[in-house]
Image (tube, rainbow, N blue to C red):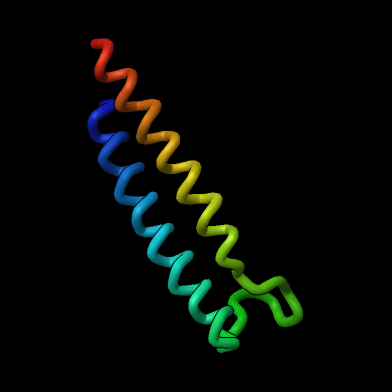
Length: 70
């Protein structure tokens, strides 16, 4: 189970990093993406994807450490 969790968390972390870099490039180039969600709501920020990537990479490291002991 931990090996599957490690693999899934690792790939989700990589996907979040790629999305964060894409959104950051849009911010640098001053390209405004259409908002998702209710009108007047908050736009999706690249910081959300950076924090998600950190969470998934930490989850991957924790599950890898657990399998290494077994």
